Length: 477
Image 1 (tube, helix red, strand yellow):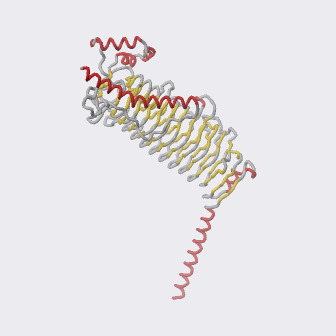
Image 2 (cartoon, rainbow, N blue to C red):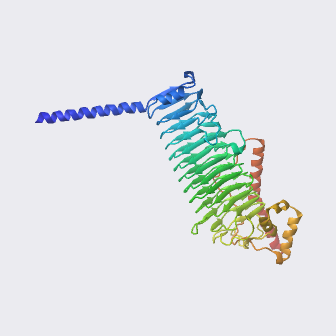
Image 3 (cartoon, rainbow, N blue to C red):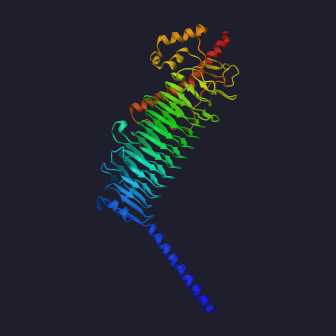
């Protein structure tokens, strides 16, 4: 009997030892590294992918490799010396259909040009992809995620095809993909960075320029948008039909298309827009039915609206937004209501603070940093422009000055105030940790320098000059 038990133990140990040996062997296979060089021929990368085992690392050295390539198993593709994968103007350059694939260090170029087929440089149809440190050049769609939950798009440079904007694809499209992170990418000459039907997105540290919509959100709850630069697009960001979006510490400047919104918000609930720079846009923020739900509040706090044609534009039906501690600096029109009217259900001040207005004509006798008189937006010519936008042609004309002078001189024609800030701030503030404007060349550097200089002068000199005038007035009277 004892011999039988001993034999069983020996058999069990043999089985366990064989299992451990096979496990180590499979692990060794998973960690296999393949090296591919241009000398192996233009089809060598596609061949290496086809022959690799799940978990393999493929190191690709400098050279030109032909696409299209399909990655249908979990692999890591590492480019050394910027190897080029050329799609030869056909379809997707690299298509990923397996989870846990990494592509890093490549120049990916020349996708197809079919908008119907949505040809892309990197197309991903599986979860947990990592796409980092790549250059995408002359691709219709740059990086396209579809049902690719948990993926990472990091530190890529994406430049679209040199065609009319209506014929371009999206440099990044995230479609039905939750928990995706998009960070530190440089994007230019695309259509829109599209993020649709996806939850818990993080969009941080990117620069998007010379496109149509810098960011285009729809149905994306719980998104974080932070420390991005959205520059010289038709629209900086347009956010729609989403809940609990937080947008903070971004620089949104020079967006001057037909609508020219720095930020457009439609049907956005419980949004937080905090500590951003809105500079030199046609309209800093445009609000359309945001928030949409009765018990929702929009928080717009600590932002700088500087040198825009219009700082904040609202439709007459917009309700339940709280504007506090923002700095409205030398906008042609601080606040506009499309079609005219007043905004009775939006808050422009709390017991602690209101907003800074560069055209505020009040004073601070107590020296507590708050104006002793309320700020009232009641310029007749502005109200006329809200109702008839074509009158903006005469904004700086003697006619505009005459209309406003008449409204002040004759209370009978003085308009009802569109907003009242009962606790205006005497000194503006600039949020910390916002990305600086780039200075790539002559015109861009000059524009950036003049803008920052003007902002600095508006923030430092104008309040001092105003206070000195008040001191002189006190002595005279």
